[in-house]
Every structure is written in structure tokens, then in C-alpha cells.
Image (cartoon, rainbow, N blue to C red; front, side, top):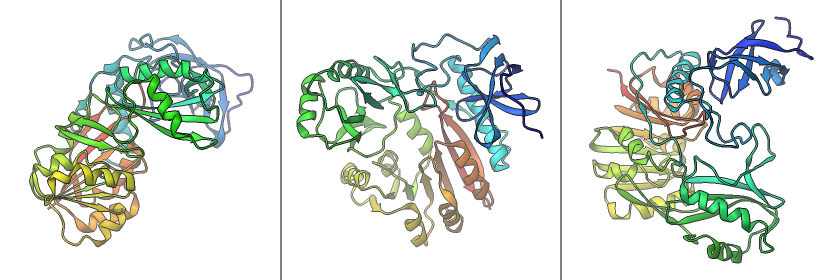
Length: 406
């Protein structure tokens, strides 16, 4: 197909659908065009721009015929800030479309036609985040701009928790004071709504301990080390550098979906983090092996499962190294891999081990489709659930329950 001439050209197109990544898809003369901040069914006017890979993108599309699902965004920074992509759509519509994106991704990349219902587990779509990264530049506080590394200054964030918004307000004043280190680029803030953990992500020079002491005088509740977080009926120690789920409203619901009604003698928890699933599993299984490679999270899981000695057995290893030496299949395996998914080696070992039950918690439908395409050679999908941990954004979590074919 001859590349479309785009210079000084405008076109009117109909939006077909959302695609994973936050954009919507339309076509110009048969060529795919991606447009941000528009809805399926809308008619828009665009000036197409060609990008790498001969892809067409629309910058600042103008809506001619709006969708009935379009709503007024609640955030004044929407479409400038890169954090949210869906605030212009009603929340029920967001979750419906995410289910369709999941189905389409599984078909396209995994050759998987899953026709059963995919239930959506959702909570309050606002004030849900317990963790954010703030960037600092020339006395300003903010997030990254949409499709840019430039700063979008903010004074508040409607998807962040009240404690985080309190901190954002204080830091907007603090960055203008002489005590503020001008070489600090990025801070991560994590909270249980009482305590607050500050983690340095990017800095041009080391940050002195007195900076955190100074911040403690400005923001109540700053803790010098680990933070205690209540969830799923347990208290978790979470140190700097340890992963924990960001949606403060859906932690219990996520754990309930992952565990289901499972119980028995043996279960393996891969990519265990600080033990979010391991601790509840210990009440249901005689032996729980928790596999975590990161040193910070491994030390946390040792502390968090100390009361379950004899039932929980932490192992510090990569998933691949652990699975290679596993000879006896456990009754169930739970895997919560990073965005890159399980990958070829881990899926190959899971096929060899062939545990009767396998549950995958995925934050990327594309890598999930790739992994399921391999695993469904010996497993069947019993249930898929979409857990909307990231309202107002294109991200979502999928829980896939698999059972071994007989």
C-alpha cells in the first residue's frame, strides 16, 4: 500500500475502537491512525502525522460528533498530564471497553477465543492510588506530560489518595524554600493513609538524611524505613524498593479473586513480592513456597511470614531458577509476573511441571496472550476476571485461572 501523503492534510474519520495503550484507532484510506483522548463511535477531524514504523498519529484531534459516553474530565490537567487517558469517558464505559480490549488482544496475539463472561472487579475510580512518582524541575512539582519527558506542574491529583494530595500541596511550597535540594529529580511517595514513605528515584547527587528529617517537620507521618500496610486481613511490612499493589480500595478483592476457594497441601507463589498472596494462602495450604528474587521484598516476606514458620517457606531465587529444580508438582501455582510476563523459559518449565491448577495475575494483556498461547497446549482457561486497579487509565489487571487438561 502506498504511504499516505500527510503534509498539510486534514481528514475527517470515524473512530473504531480503543486499543491497549490509551489511544483510539481509526483509518485513513485503509491505513491505521491512532488518536488520543477520543472515544469509539466519534467522528473527528485530524491532521495525520507519520511516525516511526510508518504509523499515523493524530495530534490534538477535534471531535465533530461526540459519543454519548463522553463526560467532562474531573482533572484540570487531563490531556496535558500523561497519567490518565480515559477521564473523558464514563467509568462503566471504561471497564466495558477494557474487557473488549482484553478479548481482542487474546484473539489477535494468543489465538484465544474466550467467549465466557469476564467479570469486572472495580472500586471507587477516584482517590485510589497509594503510590505515585513526583518529578521536580526549577521549583515546580508535577508528573510527565503526555508523550513527553517535560514536566506538567500540578497542585493536586484526583486519582491519588488524600494523604498523597496533602503531600503534593506541601511539596509545592517546599520546593521553593532554600532547604530544598535542587538536584533532586524524582521522589516516590507511598502511603497507608497514616504513614508516608519517601523514596528517592532520581537525583544528580546523594540526598542527605537531614532532607528526610526536614520533610518530616513539614508532612506528618513520614517514616524513616519500612511502612506497615493493612490488607487482606494481614499486616505487611513494605520496605523501600519493595513492590505492593497501588489501588488501596481493591487489595482485598484482588486477593479474594486470586485465591478463590482453593485449599490443600502445597502451593507455590511465584514473584511473591512482600507476600500479599502468601500470607492468606498459609491459612489454606499446609505448605506455601514463596519465590522472590528482589532482596528488599525477600527480606520483607521473611518478616511478614515469620508467624507462619513451618507453613510458609521463603525462597530467594528467580522464577526460572526455582522452576528448573522443581520435580514434584504442587497442587497449585500462583504467578504474578512483572509487565514482561512469564516468558519462554518460565512457561516451558510450567508445562513440564504441570501443576493441576495455575493462576496468572497479569498487568499486560499482550504478554498474557503470548504466555497463554503456550500454556493452553496443556491447560484450559476456567475463568478470566478483569480487576480494574487503574481507573481513568488504559492499564488493568487480569486474573487467569487455568486447570490442567486430563
